[in-house]
Image (tube, rainbow, N blue to C red; front, side, top):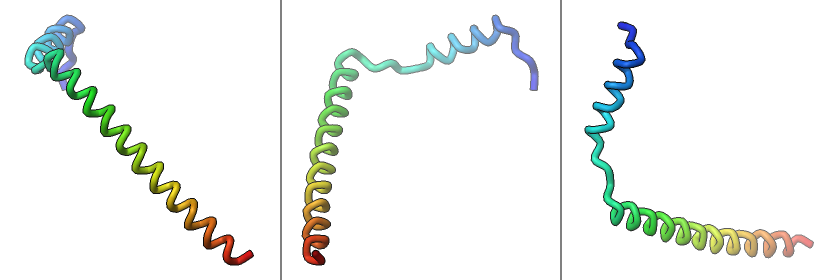
Length: 65
């Protein structure tokens, strides 16, 4: 493996950075909003599942006592 000088490394990093397709401000905003919505939906789903399972466990344990 050939050693790369610091200057060559910086040049290569700049070349690779120029190849990247950066998102627009609107795309970033839409993506952020969608992520937040999905996080809230997942949180509500797991809240409901936790509530149901908690009630089932309490019912089962309550029958024995």
